[in-house]
Amino acid sequence: MPRSVLPRTETARCTRERDDALEAARRAEAEAVRARQAEADARAETDRARADAARERDTVREQHQAQLDAVAALTAAERARAERADRRHLTTALTAPASGNGKLPRATAAQAGQQ
Image (cartoon, rainbow, N blue to C red; front, top):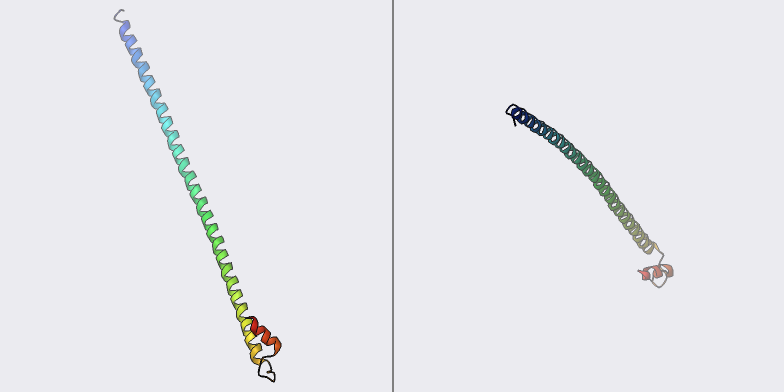
């Protein structure tokens, strides 16, 4: 090969290598940008999932607390009803007229025997 062609060929090869390297760098940079965007999207999705989970936890906690409150209210109402029934029974037994033999009247005696 003549000497004059060799430098041009070498120059062309170096130019192609440089262009290939620049193109590879551009592709790598584009891939890095896509990777950063994918990471940001994943973080945002994770944040949304965490927020959804926190809302669900709060809702379930509120539902459980409402159930506990309802149970406490029902227990208190039943306790109050039982106390009223006991008071009525005691009041009835104390205010009932005594029969001649010193025993409680039949209805009251039957009620007292049921307990």
